[in-house]
Amino acid sequence: MLNGSENEAQPPSRREQLLRRMHPVFREVDAGFQKYIATVTAHPDWDDDKIEKELRLRGVGFALAQELVSFVPMAFGREVVAELGVTCSEDFRLHEMSDDSEQDLPLADEMAFAWAKAIVDEYRTPELNPVFKRIASRSAELNAVNNALNAGMTEDQLRETRLAPSLVYLRRAKKNYGGPGTRQP
Image 1 (spheres, rainbow, N blue to C red):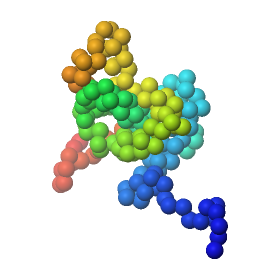
Image 2: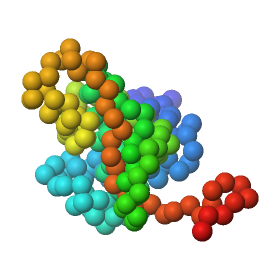
Image 3: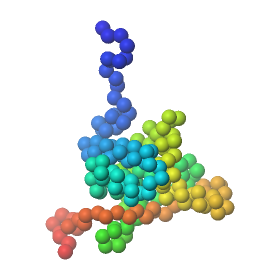
Image 4: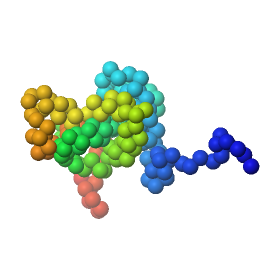
């Protein structure tokens, strides 16, 4: 029998437990998420475009890179905003950069947002809270709340506030169908 924990089987981490319950594509999302966290931690002064380019250089696909840059700060920032009693929309407003169209879509359908929301508690620890704060501070929601406070709104007034859907600029492939048995031009 072995003594010491070094060679004993360790229970799976909370992250691994979540990944086992989710669709396998979330492993790719998690790998990109880890690269996003590492990039923002190493380069906190970089803007979103530079972070997205770095993610692409590190092997993250175009779509996932832009989604991580947009939705991870949103998920983290909403944690802080919720603690202040502010209600956030469950949707976001997609601004499709290829044709300048806009539509409201559910955040729950966005894998990068769903994964960041599922894993955010790992970053609310004393060791990782600085990382959490750095990511959360990049969110439009937290920025809006800070601007409201700086403009003189009280915390009581904030608790009565509901934020509109956040505007997210993405370039996405267009669907070629409008449902079963139909085609759009």
